[in-house]
Image (cartoon, helix red, strand yellow):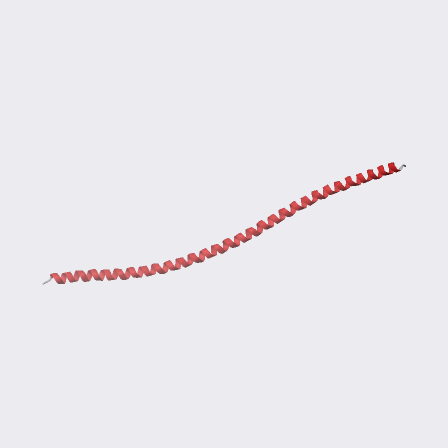
Length: 112
C-alpha cells in the first residue's frame, strides 16, 4: 500500500469516527433537552404547589384577621346599641315625666 492510500484510509476512518461522534453528540443533545424539559416541568409543578400553599396561608391569615375585626366591630356595635337603648329609655322616661308634669301644671293653673 502506498502512502497516499494509507493517508486516504486513515482519513476515511477519521471521517467515520467524526460521523459517529457527531451522531453521539446529537443523541446526547436530545437526551439533555429531554432531561431539561422534565426538570423544568417538575420545577414548574413545585413552584405552583409552593405558590398555592403560600396563597392559602395568606388567604387564611386575611380571613382570620377579617373575622377578628368583624367580631370587634360587632362587639362595639352591641355596646353602642345597648347605650343607645339606655339613653332612649332615659329620654323616654324624662319625656313622659315632663309631659305629665306639664299637663298637671296646666291643670293646676286652670283651676281656681
